[in-house]
Structures are given as C-alpha cells and as structure tokens.
Length: 421
Image (cartoon, rainbow, N blue to C red):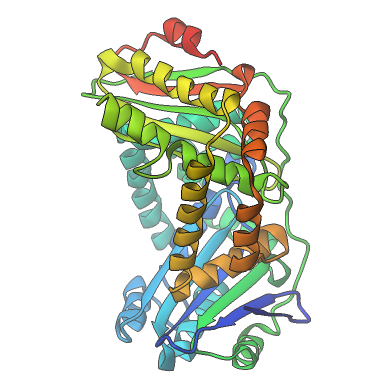
C-alpha cells in the first residue's frame, strides 16, 4: 500500500505507512546518472553524489554532516547508477524532521568548495584504481563496454581518470542545474508515519524549489558494430569472466518471465549453474547470473572465477545450460521452486523501511508507475514453462553473445570460437 502526491513544482512524493516499525526511511531519487552524461562528463553524476556529503552553508564540513546523523543513531548514504542517483537516510521515528532537513540541506545547499573538489577527485581516482585492480569489477566494466560500445550505457558510472581529473566547479554546478530539478525528483518515505505529515514536511522545505527542463538520456543503438570479446591480461590465480547477452527494458511485458528464468539459471545456491558448475563439477567457487533492466535495454550476465586452465571448460558448461533452457521445457517443480524463491525474497525485503522506500521511489522515477508486491507476485505466478522457453529462445542467440575475460594470457581466438548456442 502506498500514497502518492505531486507538488506544484513537480516533485513526486510516495509513502507507505509501516506502523509496527520504529524507524522512518527517506529516499530521494534524482534522474541523474551515467546515461545522462556526455562523453567528456563521464563520472560526473557519481562525483556530485560524493560532493554532496562534503559540506553545506549550515554544516560546512563532512564531519558536521556525519555527526548530525551519527548523533541520532541513524544511517546516511547515497548511490549512483546508470539511470538515477539516490540519497537516503534511515532514522528512528522521532528524528524524521532532522533527517529530512539534512538531506534537503545536502541537495540544495552544498558548497562545492574547490578544496573539497580537489580532495574528492583524489578519493574517486583511488576508487577507480580499486575497481581496476579487482578482476571481478574489471570484467563488469569490460562487458558493458562491448555490450553497448561507445555509448553512455556502456560507460563506467565512476568515470575515467582523465574525465574525473578534468572536472571543475562550473561543470558540476551546470550539471546540477540541469538534472537536480524538482520535476526530475521522486521522494520515497516509509515507516511509522502518515502520508499527510510526509507531504506537509516536504512541501515546507522543497515547495519553493523552481523546476526546469531536465536533460535527456541517449537511446541505445543496437545496430552498432560490437566486438564479441574483451580480454585483458592479468597475472592472477583465477580467470574471471562475464558472459552476457542483451536483455529487456524496465516495462517490457516479459520482464518477470526473464527474472524467473534468471532465478532458475543462476541466482541461488540451488540454481542450475551453481549445482552443475560448483557442486557437480567443482569448476568454480562463485558462479552466478543476474539481469539488468534499463529504460530501453537490458542484459543477462553470468559471472564466475575459475582456474585459467579450465576457463574453456567453464564457458562450454555455461553455454550448455543456456541451450537446455532453449531446447527443454522447465519442469513444473523447478518453476514452483523458482517462483517461491522470488516471491519469498521480495516479501522479506518489504519488512525493511529502506527497502520499501526504495521500492516505491525507484519504480516511480524509472517507470512512472509503482507495482505493488501483490501485483508482482501475481505476474510471477502467471509465468509458465512455455513462457520461459519462448523468452529463452528469443534472447539466447549465438549472434548476441558477448564475453569479457580477465586472465593470464587469454586466447581470444579460441575463446571466440566457443561462443556458440
């Protein structure tokens, strides 16, 4: 259950009462992310998210911001993705006004001192170095680059060293003025609080915020030529890989069929990939799959780490499982198990105020609609074996396979010859 109100300036407020909890969570979603950036701005949305924690006129330092939330036993954080940025605070119910005041202060009154910008620039470059040094993170970046080559969706949210190094205060302020607008903002609130109080409180602090015309995102060009493989040499004990195919967008009618297919494929310890590749064959310690959905695109990714000598065996084993989903009907017992897994995870998430606020706010920003838990459960229950096989046949296509590998001396030509379905 949720209530929704749009203020005159375009801010959308969604809230869900959870009277048996003692907390309230506020999630402020902004339509700003790597998809909205020009090539020379790569990493700008993420940079701004960091800087909003560095000081405002009333709280001039990052210490004063952190002490404000620590002083009431709350949690404050943010995150940047390809299509949104979120700032959130979770606090005990009596501290809702202070948490809202803090978040609004950060978003509307951050100073962006030149000294803070220079210091955070170094921090983000170290974050980049950390991701580059991590083979698991590196294959995630490489697979996006060949999935959506030379396009915003294929760029790393954190950015590149050269773009992060070149950003100055004027670029930051201009981008905020374009994307950080009330009509590009959704605020989700959940916990022991009524919708009327939420709306009144937010109206009081953000009702006078002037709206504008947000910048747009670049659509995916699916006809662009792409390399099938991205391979990088590293002296590592394991070869790390990500095998991927294009998926489907947020509101596609087959979204939940694909989500269920992914649960069967590799998103649990009883999934096909885990049982076959880890439990039966002992090829990998970690093997899993996940799906991503965006405005006009998506992906299905399978990731794993393996002894470099067994890399080809692992790839062949993964592809065999994809072929099975295309050629063989999934049993009713396996479908029921996957449905209960998906529904159970979703319902357990909804016991947490942060998850509920994020569930509502994220959907409203990205899709302009909110599916309730019951609606999602109903959609999952309607999926049958024919649906699963049809989607597998439509998506699991040999010509769409991409592979990213970080390994000692990867043999690209041999690996590319393996990409067959």
